[in-house]
Length: 158
Image (cartoon, rainbow, N blue to C red; front, side, top):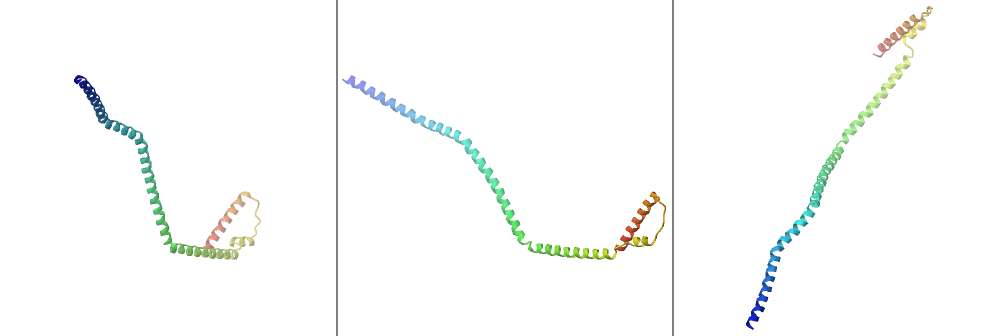
């Protein structure tokens, strides 16, 4: 029986050592399996995460630019509040300019009424000549009359 007990004991020891060996193998390989799973997860999740980060940085840059724009606009609006006096001066100058323009028009209309006929026209009304019909001569006379009238109007204006 002692021999039988040794065989039983040997079988039990063998099974126990196999289980211990199997457990040691599982425990020894478990970290590598965990690392494999981590590596697999990182590989799948890394690209979308990087893309999201790039998008967030881009949005942050755009948002920062818009904040600067808003700050600039607020500063400009505050500065416009200080320009009220300038706008009042501009308005007063425009009113004065319109008034002076109206005065100039009135003076011009008064001068035109007093200068209803030019000196040349008044003079030519008294001179009557019977000239023969010469087309070349009438064009020269008309041009000379226009020049004299133009010079007379300039002389009276200055």
